Amino acid sequence: MKLPVFAQAACATDLTIAEAVDAFRTGRLSSRQLVEACLARAEAGRELNVFVTLDAAGALAAADAADAARRAGLPLKPLAGIPIVVKDNIHAAGLPATAGTPALADFVPGEDAPSLRPLREAGAIVLGKTNMHELAFGATGYNPAFNTGELTGVRNPYDFTRIAGGSSSGSAAALGARMALAALGTDTGGSMRIPCALNGCASLRPSHGRYSGRGVIPIAPSRDTVGPMALCMADVALLDGLISGESALPPVTLAGLRLGIAPGFWRDLDADTRAVAEAALDKLRAAGVTLVEVAEERLQALTQPIGTLVVIHEARPAMQTWLREQGPGIDIDELARGIASPDVQAIYQQLVLPQQVPGADGLVDSAPLYAAAMADGRPVLQAHYAELFARHALDAFIFPTIPLVAPTAGPEVNEPACFERLIRNTEPSASAGLPGIQLPAGLGAASGLPVGLELDGPAGSDRRLLAIGIALEAVLGRIPRA
Image 1 (cartoon, rainbow, N blue to C red):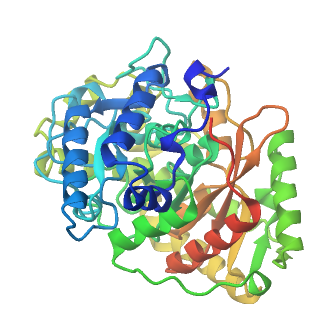
Image 2: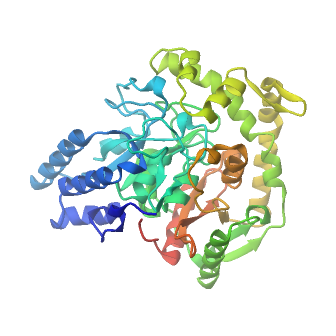
């Protein structure tokens, strides 16, 4: 079921960044008109619970300034007048940063995170801060806090009875609903790629450490990363270039690409996901891409003793440090008492605060297991990835980002079984710190919901991976908006 506004004809907010910049240049569109159109979409889509904070007055003032500079013939910045949104665990000067949790409702950072600053300096207009799975501890966005409509949690613009995914829920839903042209999110185990797959948008999870982690409300610093999200891969590449300072893209030819197919990432797919993903592979083969069957089943198995354990062990000290050094100065127990989501409350009380993880005989101390994961488990996983890329001469692995289309929204989506299925394909590369892109592949024939493809590349191959994404998008095309 769609909200009525999302059945409307094409509008100004359907534009990519490049299309909007061209429309500004030719006078077909002003920044104020574009921002007003995004704000109208946001207002009409309040039931989607996308925003924690919507700064309409600030965005319109910035749009007017961009239009005035353009009329005056001043040199234009690459994002001059482009409206973006920012996940609410990333600091944006003068706007609250809640991480989707009530205890942080009044915290307002005084400066932009280093990952946001270059976008603002390039002329981007921040429309507002987007809702998310509370404290980034989940993959659904089903958060009872900061809802602007009558429903619970961030909803999917293609069908508002479905989840938007998480934890970068509102950023992806805003793009799917065409409330903005680009966004920033964060990703720890799939938190940008999952919602982008469910909402039909593109993203990059950068190689770990490529972006600064300062000015981000943390979950697990050895895994967390900010990343760009947009309506097409070229826009993702533009945002990444501005943040990283790496503007060049290497040349890519479809006939020269070798993409790996690992069976473990292709099992247990729902019918729509399988049909769309396999049709995409057929198009890529026809375009000259070489698809390499990689008969290996170890990547996901090697991830098991690393992923959740590392997140749980790092979460408490990371949050305590942020609260003390960058946040409002409250203690972690006060933060925990205000958690609104039953699933996140349980995780904090049972696992994060006591630093325990499930073991064979109940909960056990996470410290020794964490030490082993960092000393042995992660290096083994990284080495295995590197060996596979080298042995098969792969540019990347390709697979469905998640095994199913967006599940129906409700408390049950936050059960562990659903979480594990949602992150099954996104978790391994995150545990290894590798770059990954999410690329919209099509809409399911039965559900009408987006299906995404992920490509994971070798460490440090971010710009090449983005160039590959642009080349593949030219073959697969862009999917219709909600």
